[in-house]
Amino acid sequence: MKSILLAAVVVSSLVGCASVPMGDEKQDAALKTFAAPAGNKAGVYIYRNEAMGAAVKMDVELDGVPIGQTAAKTYLYKEVTPGKHTIASKAENTDTLEIDAKPGTLSYIWQEVKMGLLYARTKLHLMDAAEGRKGVLETKLAETK
Image 1 (cartoon, helix red, strand yellow):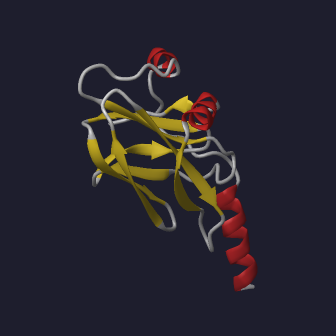
Image 2: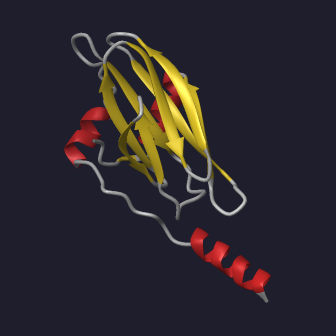
């Protein structure tokens, strides 16, 4: 009986869609032009273009500071100073990825959703520009701190 109840709880947690605060539509459109930041800055897109794990929000940190949450078909965008930065994605597990941001460039990080034991797991991947842009275009901007 307990195993049936546990299975029902797990299945019900995977149904439906998680929602996160969304970013401004005009900013979303502007960011999808993929213009590199001016001055001594670099841009970082963290996108989740899958429907899998739709009921799960995932926390994202940049250099140990929370910058927002993703849900299915959303992305976050942050401008950073050039140099090494660590992105962390938190779900059933925590995955980290280090990037070396160059001035005037854009980095694309795919936040993959994987099946976990009781919850979705996460895996971060640094993507090339073509694949990254395609993934971002499939998503909408989530509110980024």
